[in-house]
Image (cartoon, rainbow, N blue to C red; front, side, top):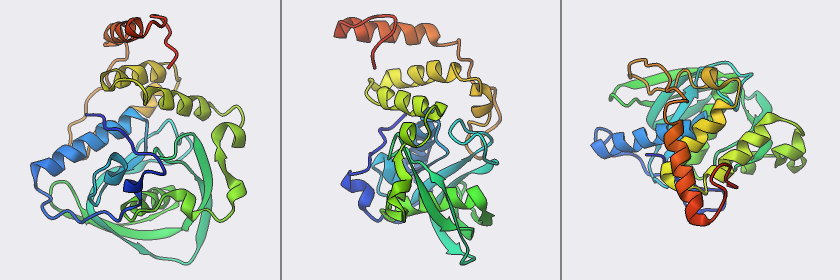
Length: 252
């Protein structure tokens, strides 16, 4: 199920998340499944449980290619329960970050250049990794969420924080973010269809969605966009007929 993503300002994002006491609980696995569905629905690269209102130390991240970060190298798709983080160097790198909980904005954030992290995987085994570059940045960003910290709190120069369309005029990402904000206001059952329609209009769609699976799942072909488009149109027609709006191109 695609969950609602909490936005900056919601006090639930400011809490320190609780440790998961029973990682093998089916309820935890269901939460993780919802996290992946939600992350992929919004073309995200990472997500922490507090972002969907779950006060637990669980995070997911990783991609082969991602529509938001097309120039970044792949990051292994990973689920971590009760993760930990260790900084390996005093060297700090600055780079632009965004967040599904801070839609439409970017900020220049300093992060440790190299880290070691670990935690429990979904199958109950443990993992330890060293990471640098964007991989390290992604993990640090999500680990902060578990401690009630959002990336704007890390920015040292607030002139390097703003809306994408103002910071990077003409960047296609601005249109994509605007679409996601409109979709967030749609009924839940219509969101996935609206996202597929928007993704199909992007040249990188099939590349950006080629690895949408959780660790341990068997590989499968990405869902065809054409399949379901009739259903999508039907839902949209019904919703906008009810609202008295255009049936063909809704104003979301």
